[in-house]
Amino acid sequence: MSRRIFSLVGVFLLLGAAMALAQEASNTPATPVPAASDYDINCSGFISGAKLPMDTYVLDGVDNEFHAPLRQYTGGDYVFLGQRAGTNFAVGAEYSLFRPGSETFRTTRYDGEHRYLRSLGTPYVDVGRVKVTQVTAQGAIAQVTFACGAVYPGDFAMPYKPREVPQYTPTNDFDRFAPANGKKRGGIVAGRNNPAIISKGSIAYINLGASDGVQAGQVYRIFHAEPLVMGGLMYYTDRPRESMGEMVILSTQEKSSVGIVVRSLRDINIGEGVELE
Image (cartoon, rainbow, N blue to C red; front, side, top):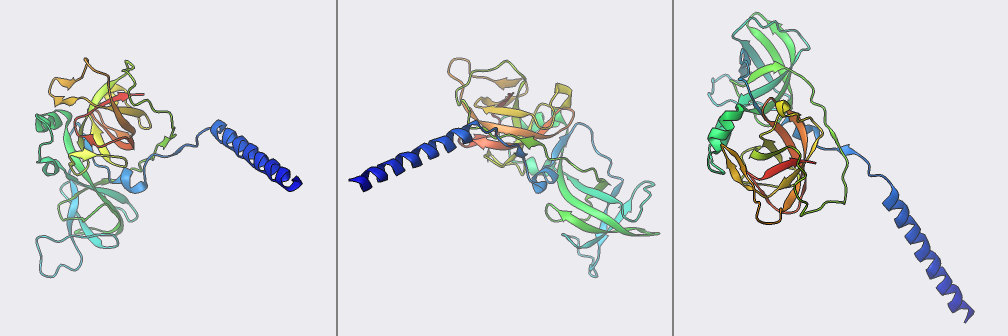
């Protein structure tokens, strides 16, 4: 009998300790975490309101005795940087590599997509990063130190500028049917590599930028809306609004911004709406 009583007491003590730990965990503030990986933020691509200068470019690379027209390079390879203007190369200088990304968005995801993208600027693809190891009379020799994919002759280079990864604080409190809050609203105009559907971890571009007050680190709710048109989003007003997830802004341009989806309750179509939280 006494053993049974002691057993019951032990169970109650364990339950009490477990409840205390659970209560303590629920009262502990959430810890901020990086919103994206180094790869995601440095390979996100972007839509620039103005065309970028292409004076410095990848001319060729090593090991091309047969002058193959479709040469490509990757991490650790050496490439030759040429110039169309008076670029002063220096040993140790780092350059980011880009290429125009208009060809990426040839497939239409919603009516008026191409016109809408053109109204925001020129899409660019992040290619990677190189570091100058030697300067010659013909140009610079640089090593590929970081690659998002294949590096091709013709990719252009600009001085490297680090991109800071914003912090994001995950929460379990998310109202799927929250009404509009009256804050800044826009839409998802495209996704990296032109997908039709995005989900958690996807990179996407919205039609709000620095001129609209958007800043890196801001969190935007993603909600269901009619596809984008030139006049803006067509919002549902005759039914409850469905929220589909959240995104964190990684970087901003004049008219557009790059974000990463950090929460998705279901598949998110290109063209859905976003609202500042």
